[in-house]
Length: 124
Image (cartoon, rainbow, N blue to C red; front, side, top):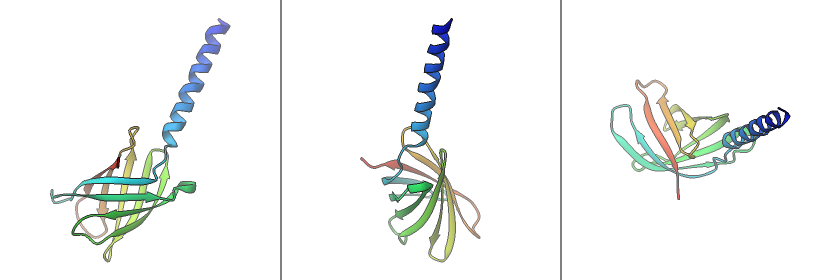
């Protein structure tokens, strides 16, 4: 009985450590951007996430035919939220951080109807 309790506790500790490691995965780096605008048109580009110390970070998008966009972000668990400015408009994107390192997000721009979708894939 003691062996089974110790084995169960050890397994629970390993599982908790694995879950903590997955939640603490580093997000800094370069990503391929694959997105869809609210009107159904698609886009591709590059995003770079930097400075994730303390849960805060910067994010920069480079999308062809779009002005370079800089934002700031905050992580909480498996969610990364970012506010950004696109020209004079203010936007918000909320990403779910997946176990495989990809980020799946939904974004919107203040004063505009509709939402877009965006996936960030770590660049190889």
